Length: 234
Ligand code: B16
Ligand code: MG
Image (cartoon, rainbow, N blue to C red; front, side, top):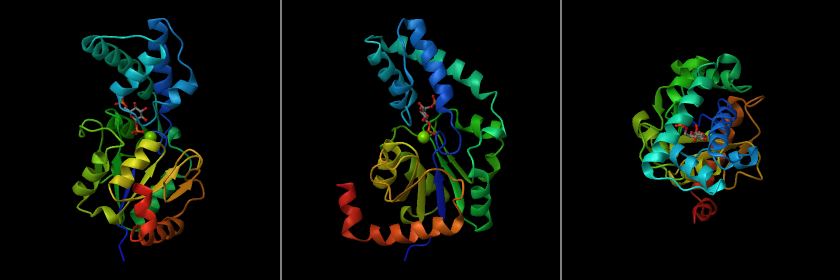
């Protein structure tokens, strides 16, 4: 039987809702380029890297840019985005997250961050929860974007924990796929209709406690040894 040792959290959509700030900054860039960018379009950017997000945005606007222009546009968007996140404070931590982090600490579970964002450390600092994290893997440390498992595999390596003892919390389909490919238990955060393949999906952390977390891990651990979980990855 595997032992539960590590919880790895995605950031945007799991701990805080920074998607709204990404949206404001991308929309401003689209408007400057002369086209509209809707909230529906923005859904496609969740969990996706900055440069890939820009490529999706340019495709929406039917525009082509050189690599140099893309770097300039991505930097511009990031300047606006950073202005927004510098205004964040503890009130932006999503409901139930703080008590759950405290419960993990009380139960001696190692806590890691596994985020695609290069601004992840700034965000954790702004909302005041950096000290909960034993390991932080962000967009500056990884070379391959989700659904590649690198961000989670590296998190477990740095924590010194085997993948089968880790549970990932993710709100994006690419992140769920990455966690499954890393051989970890994955709990989706959001709408079960949209989060295919997760071992379990919760709407958020309100009323989610340590006992339920442990139950999900035990059930998924068994399934991971069985044919069912293997076919999920195929
Ligand atoms: P940055 P996550 C992701 O965060 C966001 O969901 C995604 O929309 C964003 O493009 C990506 O970070 C990169 O962010 O521009 O700050 O490096 O969900 O992986 O925590
Ligand atoms: Mg996310």
